[in-house]
Length: 250
Ligand SMILES: NC(=O)c1ccc[n+]([C@@H]2O[C@H](COP(=O)([O-])OP(=O)(O)OC[C@H]3O[C@@H](n4cnc5c(N)ncnc54)[C@H](O)[C@@H]3O)[C@@H](O)[C@H]2O)c1
Image 1 (tube, rainbow, N blue to C red):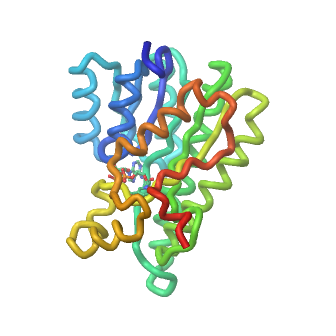
Image 2 (image 1 turned 60 degrees about the vertical axis):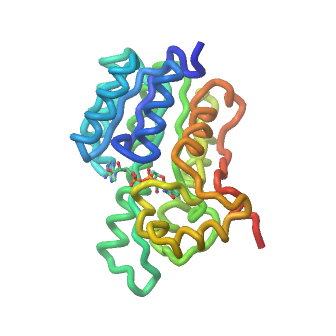
């Protein structure tokens, strides 16, 4: 039996990268998956591939900054599959600017997607999870939400996700709705192409990482799977750091 057998999951930013991998893994583990993203063609393609392999998946247009898109995505899960058990707030954008280069529009854009998007997602999902009797919200933060970096606005947006997750855990624990944050290090996806796309950049990242490797999406998806499943039923408000040891080195 799959580790998510009988569960219904909604994943934002699921058209590519870590979100797409989580959707594939969740479906392999028995979940019905609703994939949301703004790049519709890619999202529909991932959803179709999951279907061809015998999984249950539906794609929905979901801009995480839109409250009405969130309502529609949650309704899609409930109407198609009968309920919602799991939300993975995975969608995110990266702006690699320091304090003085960051202008108001950079700041607003990144807080809108990375922070407000998580708030709106959790708010939309809680009523459906309450109706289901329990739930698990997994918020994808970053190591930039734990320690300082030169990516000022990105780090601030991901730090908010960390503490928002703990607040949700406290508020909804009595209803058996859990909420945890995940803090990936350097994961090989389109997002960090500019950082590790060159030989020098890749080597610099490897040198920073005690385990000496750059991770792939599956390294994160397996942690998200644990938090989504009932295996983590006593885990809420926690931070799962998946970073090859970057944040523990001197
Ligand atoms: N790649 C890394 O090294 C790394 C490290 C730490 C944290 N993260 C976080 O992991 C998450 C997944 O990133 P990834 O590495 O798969 O990057 P990615 O760029 O490959 O995927 C991000 C996805 O989010 C979607 N997205 C962007 N804006 C959106 C919006 N407004 N509404 C809905 N979807 C939107 C994109 O279309 C894309 O499909 C992000 O939250 C990111 O910040 C990534």
